[in-house]
Length: 274
Image 1 (cartoon, rainbow, N blue to C red):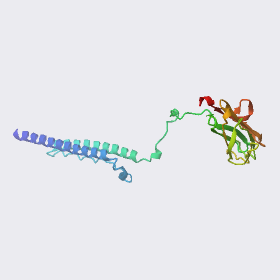
Image 2 (tube, rainbow, N blue to C red):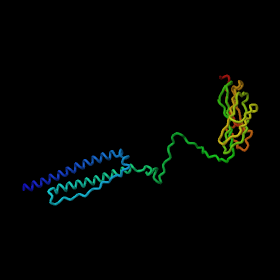
Image 3 (cartoon, rainbow, N blue to C red):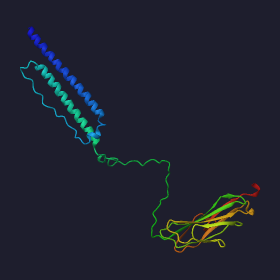
Image 4 (cartoon, helix red, strand yellow):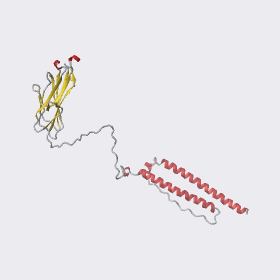
């Protein structure tokens, strides 16, 4: 009886020691795998050229029937088999994560799924224009736009006013020439005139622009003084085409009493309010 009891106690002790060893081994492996998984982003560059190994569990040798540690050996074998199954799953998970990190970014899908339309981006405050800009036909005839502006819009007797006359070719071909007549406000005295190109006759106020390429703009600067007698009045000057062979003529800032001329005005303060 005592011999049988000792034998059973020995088997029980062997089985408990086997389970303890298996538990410690499983805990150590789990810690190692946790550290490896946590540090795998650092090793991605090194692992890029190395294939990910796959753990293959080895068969567990069955215990012999006559072995005195049959119960302990069976428990240890079951624990090791369970450990190998878990290791195999951890290796597979780690391998998939590494393969996903090493995949070519160009192979990854971009954009919305098929059939899904993304909304328009929000307005960032830049505003939108309702004007549609159409390309200019390179074979279209010249289109000359005439404009005149005065600076400042308000003045007093003795001040200087600068008038700028511009002609722009908005067509698709070159304009061979344009002749523009320019007048001065009543009583105004011209002190300076300067064309960007062409010739200007200060006696007649006629400006010959010369050739104007598509998209180009030429200008004429006229500087005059405000006479004493203009106090309390509005000084208006105008410009108009004399000729523009083969070109379409467009007047910007047309005069209220003449649609064929561009006007610019300056309001002169009353001398009594100076």
